Image 1 (cartoon, one colour):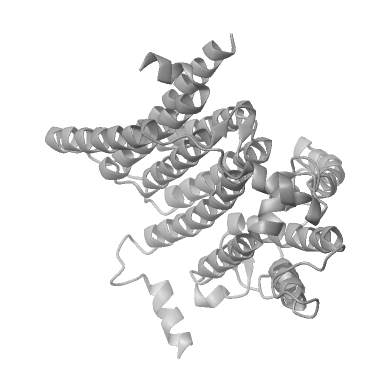
Image 2: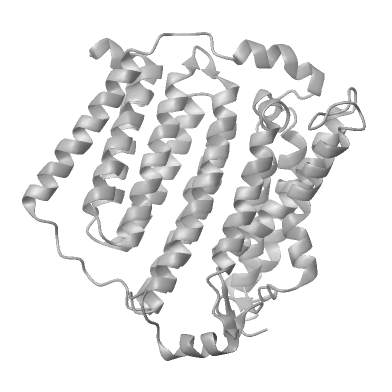
Length: 309
Length: 112
């Protein structure tokens, strides 16, 4: 039974991916890409990787999908969506042959992989020292915290790169078009009803992430969704990008993270956690990170400033 | 071949390999920037699935690859966001990076 389900799921994933890559219509391709992301999240769930499933559904399918639809709209407005002429047949055949060879080689490598125990035991044996029950978060914020620190800096750098594409006239201004909705309409009601629930879910996801699936990135995405909902419902416009509180919010997470790592020097280990207080330091870092990730994701989706400050 | 597909770990790893190949094909054949971004993301998530499937033993996926995959998903998003903004900006400037519309000439004036 479960084997048949595995096979069907893999077939669905491949089918959705084919339509996302080769679909005739760009908008349709984006929609199939989102479907593909959700199916992938299901695959991660079946593999028992619930943290990855949450990240794939929220970031891989959700935020990426919204970004692509935003780019599609931007390209349509700028007239950059003309139909492209199909590639000549021999080029298509060559591409099929090349992709087939690549896939075959990778499949061969997969088949010939030697089995191993991996690092599961090493993580489980040591995660008690961080007082974390969730092994994935023990790796993310403990054993490989350096990767996570650099990852948050990559997000910040991406936002700086996006802002660098602002036209000089509107530098520091407000991104996106202003949204006006009927005050008694569906959108405005959602904008009032859902944010408190979203906020609660985000706080819960960070808190529970220490011992169960969840964590700063998943929670940050939920908060970013709340932010976008409030903007779309016209209740509050996007902030000016040159506002100091906003910029402090963006760097709060990486700064607290880096600060905790450097403060470890006082406790004897640079980039280490003090013995016995690991969990409390990790929670402080996670809440600061959640705030910064939420702001960064929401502003990445909003794009560069469009209106003068 | 059949016993490989019967094993959950290699089934998902091989699906990942097929996704990488599919994304690679799309990346070569497609010209539109959004389609290339989708192909790039399909390659990326294919690699993640390959990675996760290969490290699946019995009850679940090794936590170290899981953490690396979550990091990878976020980094792929950062690149997608920048590339999408860049594509829109390029289209707004007429798809020509050598010269720009009058609007941007003003920009250059005010830069000085």
